[in-house]
Length: 269
Image (spheres, rainbow, N blue to C red):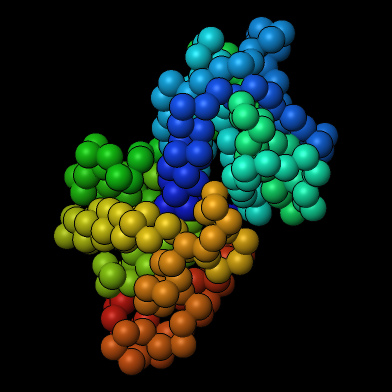
């Protein structure tokens, strides 16, 4: 599933693609992919983008006329911009049509992705409960340490909980914990304030590095120009056999997901 850096990369590409262009239609080719708010006017298009933001793994695009698009890529969804296309592409579930014939295809092999078109004031009702944005200033070591207090779950499970921190996924949590020197099995509530400082620092560091190179492409993720991201070339433990210091990387399964870590570098547990 695309994580925060990939979603931010796609959103940035989307905004560049629609700059100075009106959206003239939203077409759906697979039942359930497009969800239309019952409060939406019968003719919401044409409309132009007036602002946008990312919330966790959700993209929110605010349009003129008081409506918004909420796009969630889920596991295999991707947006692909094209200058001119009339044929429905393989696995194309929906498309956003722009003035002048340009389109943005919503491709989704697994069909779990969604595009919600709603009245802007209804956006909060379509988003789940989400925790801190890890790149915002209010995500601080003090607040993280308070959130971890009393939690008996492993730190990796806590960091993956979208109710606590929004946007983190398996790849980046593995990388963050490696840089922080903390084992994924460490009990969250047992970690010190020093550990919280390290987690916050490396969370911001890793996510910003990944955004700068367009995210991580290991399986399905592509940018809006259908090219791959590059952060997979900078991963230190995820799907690696050895860490950068030459120690053997261990793979375990936590909550059904693979955790990669170095028992030597990540001795804190």
